Length: 196
Image 1 (tube, one colour):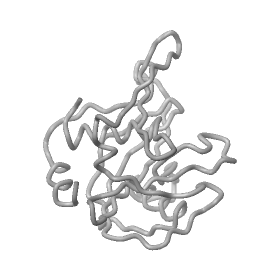
Image 2 (cartoon, one colour):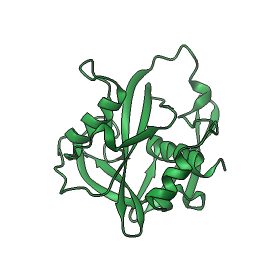
Image 3 (cartoon, one colour):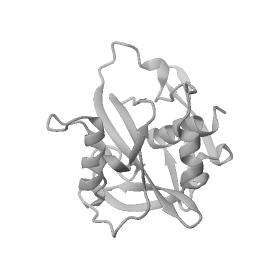
Image 4 (cartoon, helix red, strand yellow):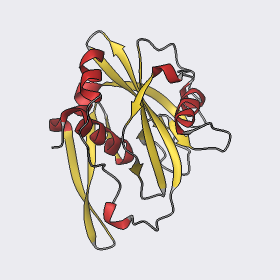
């Protein structure tokens, strides 16, 4: 999928229900903290790639998991888009601006209490990244088409509080993209390709 195809599919009027972690456990009284991630799409010869990171292994939460650059909203941030851009620069040294951001998809609510706003940015090139080893082990790219293709999703039932939910996985190379990251990708796929 190239940039023109993606933009045509992204800008539509369909209402897409959002995925979230363990939805039946999350009600209106659930305390949520605001966060944002940046789904960076980079133009390559074969089409668009998604930039992902592997979180540092020493972190207290979600060590070694695959994620988008992003993090918690801070009071010094202008808004959540600013949060996503700031965190991307801090984590992987990629300085993008609001001109790269084409929009956002629906919030993703996590079981850990975060209401995450995913912003979508497109860039035609990325420089050598400057990884903050305190937060990120490394960054890598996966073809967008691979991530969006529903045939590449795996699901596994997980039971919490006597209720069973599906957790999604996307296999790539020697790793799996799962959890909130896979949920956000599933939301993006539903937005672009329709539900399935």
